[in-house]
Image 1 (cartoon, helix red, strand yellow):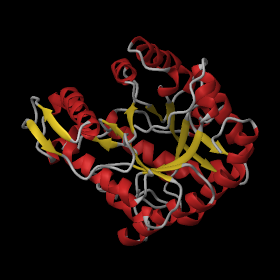
Image 2: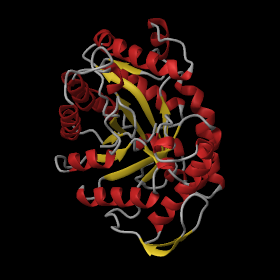
Image 3: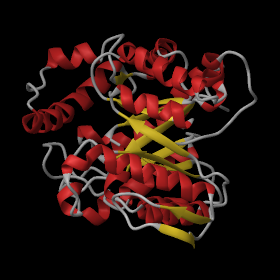
Length: 368
């Protein structure tokens, strides 16, 4: 997978700052699988219409953010996330609309900025970007890029994107793209600056880079145990402190796999079959072992990264994850990896907004 921001009043404790402003949301990769993990029986046209309906419902039930990823694979329909988010902008009023993530290594930062600045104008200032290198590599040959340039492409393009965000007229040069010599980049977004988060996986260099740049951090934690990321989060905060960024600027969010049903038993029964199919298939590409019910139960346990359960259980686990990481500013659920039908996804979004969010607000950790 595949950066965002809202700055609050400075306080001394960075952990309490993050907790006081926690936001709850949903991410989607516009997945095109169905119950068997291969086909939905629904056209691609209808799948995208369903996705926009889910974003509209998330807005109605008071969730804070909806993110759409970027992939270039047959099973996902999100190769142009800004277009999907623009459709959602016309049907929503308050929810923030984000990428999750923009695969910046394989994109032209000028065009990316123009697309999301336009989306920001259409949404009247509700747009955010989470930029990263992505978890798949199909975009490299697709766009004529060399995989050995994986890190240098991202570092250079992030530098250009931040330069464009800061300057209407850009003077910049690099290795992978022709130089800019004072050209204007338009349109300019309504928000100044346009929020950009850095989406990361598990490499210390990525955490340190986000801290040094003072960018909010969005961590994709899709397996294992959440507390194991604490040293990396501490590295991020320390790098930010050393670079002179105030604690309230160093926001930490988590992108997690999750799903909510009326009961924990129902949530697991709904989510596990599609999850197991999807991750076993991906695992064959990456050398992972097949998913078993025992391995699923382990990562869905008290310290595991999965957020699959009833509203009370999921709310309690979010609180525990926030404490384990020293305070979170945002947590987003990626549900459609489990190939669930539209009615179940809509029900889960409604439960997040109507049952999970109030429990977190009662603990004074969720932004109102």
